[in-house]
Length: 225
Ligand code: ADE
Image 1 (cartoon, rainbow, N blue to C red):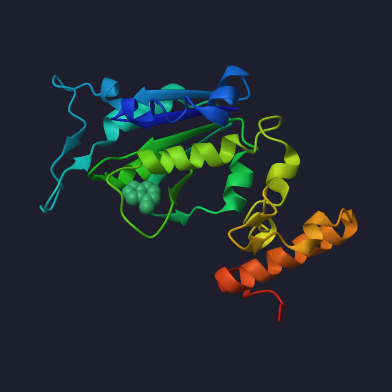
Image 2: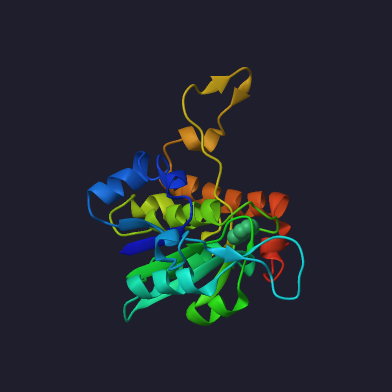
């Protein structure tokens, strides 16, 4: 899979993709990630990428031309292009699962300012990572890339993400490691019983209990007591 990220701040991505699981996925060619500075696509003398809004008002607006040229320079037949905006569809695990099946996605990051509305005609959708406003789309693009890369075949063990929080609309079950007792807090007995059937049942039930307690909204459409 290939992920292209269009940004005015490429150096923000240094480090994030050069550690741990994402770094290994890149080295093992499970994913190719390109960070592209769309300022280079501006044909204006000073490489200006924004301008004042028609109708007046505060702030600057990202111009169509550099962004659309950058999008068109990377776009192929099966490419999906998404704008990072707080007005986009709320990003959920389900969308991560479906994006992980694409062969090529482009994530477009604005910064400080809004996009010229017409840019949306050259994109397949808008994505928001939550109901809050960030200074730019870079952190959303990092979060989305991370959530996709870990789902790609061979990046992490399938068992590791099958019970992930949100897979199947449930939160994950609680996990414990040694020591058995820490400052009076013990590990649930069943986990040291060696009975794998019982452990599976306990974990399934724990996912439901955990979700009921912390994220009732995820169960609202299900018949759960
Ligand atoms: N850009 C600024 N805030 C954002 C958000 N919450 N999600 C996606 N892109 C954004």
